[in-house]
Length: 74
Image 1: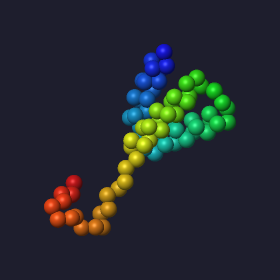
Image 2: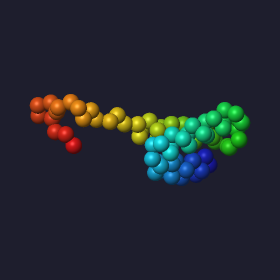
Image 3: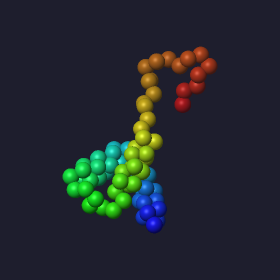
Image 4: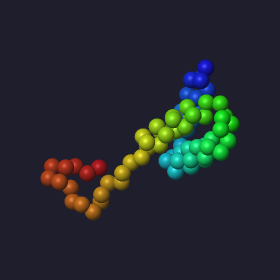
């Protein structure tokens, strides 16, 4: 039953950009900390959103360093 509700939400959340996804996760976490269990299955949503956040977290390439020999920059 929970998969029927959470999976479509996580697919939609997966389309959000990193800053919006971070703000949504932070707001949901803070709201859950202040008012426990205000939304059923909010803990599962937070775990899914945390996973999405970690998958979107990228380091920017260091543009100042020259490429190594044989390395191709994209």
